[in-house]
Image (cartoon, rainbow, N blue to C red; front, side, top):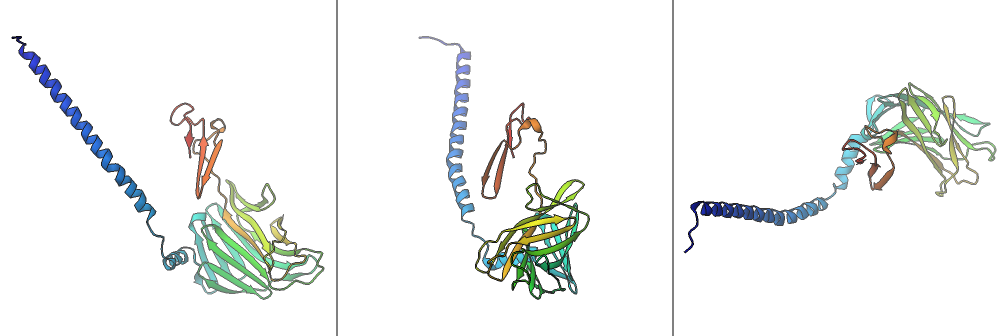
Length: 289
């Protein structure tokens, strides 16, 4: 019979216990994987099954966050937190305040180029995030939302003057932000010393039949004129520009050699911007913002 030294059995027992420990650990990992996957799927399905807010509650939240509120007689205030803007309206003047500065304006005239009509002071009506100023033949209104402050003008009847001339609505601006035409000449940008803060644009015009009317913005000093070609239009006619905070998407460590914006993907309200040569995680490791 072969006799083995005692230390052989000690080594064998050590190996056996290590193997058993490894097998036990492997079994635990398998058990965790088996139980975590259904949990993850349930978590996803639970998130997908979360119901939307009831319409009444969603409306109440919108009114509370974006509704116009009286500050004093004849003066109303509203805020658009996502746009970083606040607005006040009183008498014949309105004002938007941005962290970089302010913009104030008033409507000075409307009509044809040869026979502009003065604008009377309007009577304010407020319904949640909607403020309307009834100026007789001209209805001026403001709709506050997360997308910005939508301005609207409705002319109930065709103004006097030759139909060959465009319909004009003139607004005089003042404040600490300085206006200039946008590079594509479709909007007016209001600048602070740090750059563009507020953008006034997205002008659309339609007649009573829903037909789109050619329109544009013209800046002359601090006067903005909305020009609408109303030839053949059915009245009333509406013109709707909007005020928005100017957004610039940028990387905190972007520079010319990182190729920030080389790739862009958009899905719903999410934008993914690639920087192939970003070095934050290593030389030319790249990043996605």
